[in-house]
Image 1 (tube, one colour):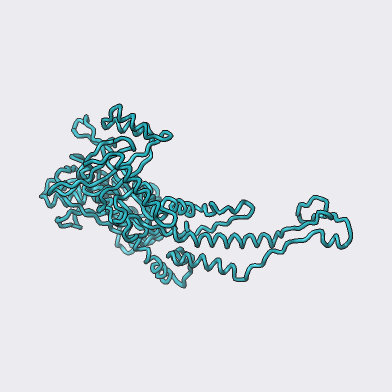
Image 2: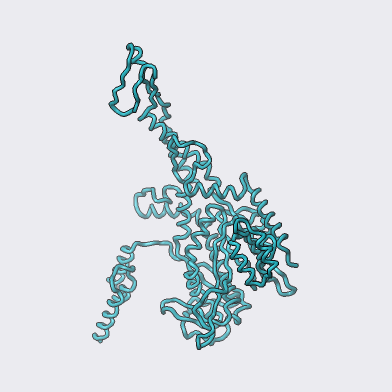
Length: 527
């Protein structure tokens, strides 16, 4: 039985209460603190005034930027396969690979999916979405990507040869803040085992009313929706839940409500998985939510800032000490400028006691060393030591590479979790393609250029699609190094002139296309 808006809001309120009970400060407040410390607003609420320079030595951002860059800097490729169908790594997809046996046809489509994933990733700007998910995960512990079907997306395709019936609809993606995602059972780690998931969104009242009218809301329902608004905004809850059918497993259903009324009635997404991909920076046992390392770096960051600020203040007061002036004997204006002549009237004792400087406390000789030690220890314990950050020097390049690889090894665990996130996203996309695309052409972009492959989704709806992230070679070369390697291969006769020119880095050779054409004409004439 479908729950009413009040019941769904009660589940939402229970989720808020649970998040508020996490840790010492609760999830919402802790995440705000983590965000401020990451961007550098690290003296917020300290009430230190504006008289002293409040120094920030932001190690949190340096650690985070280093780790996130290491996760994203390795090229990856997603490969699809179907359960029960043997894979063929030597298979080459082409325009003519159609009308084959069922097994070959499925192999063709999974190969096409691997290419089409790149096309979809480019359309939804998946690289930026990954960056946002990673950023959110580092700050809050959990990054969330929500994939949904937008029936209004223009595909540029037509259902008929006369181009009169447009094909509309495609997947869209949105990065969600973990504060707006509520799991039915927060003690279950796996998303697919959740009884339901609620997504909270604050929307303009006009947009909510427009959506409600689109799905058949009457005047009475629209009035109830308007009653839910505050300052022209309405909190809308999207609830995803499983509905089990006898001997048919389950399907993911969805309903959208505001506090007083249904915005979009319950509908079947037809999906077998929740369309939500989760990436946790650090896992917690028996928790649906991840953990951020910033939470435990904040005390070190505060200590570092305080120590450096005290050191800077000491240096300033030593170079420009505080002046004490006897107002009874010094009646003129004091500017503290170098060379100022101060008139003092009275005896020698009066002159001697007219102006004095306050001697600032002396710092221990190893105070600077203590600051540097705290900074270095914090970086090292976080896995971002001087070797990993590139601040270390080695006797030779081989030694440096060995040291850096050793420093990067602990980060591999985070990378593997991120690759799992990409694989899950790819499986979700594949389900949308199979269940929503119907009969249409899909755009393929490869070494043969851009072309379209006929796709009949009905043929593949019962397949179990598997995905795997293929991590490319992590070795990176500069353009000059790549060019030197290619020239060396050409000198040894391993590649010809055309192969050399084609593979040179972009921008290194101007008008490369014309050069290749002229080279082909010369070769043809030589024959």
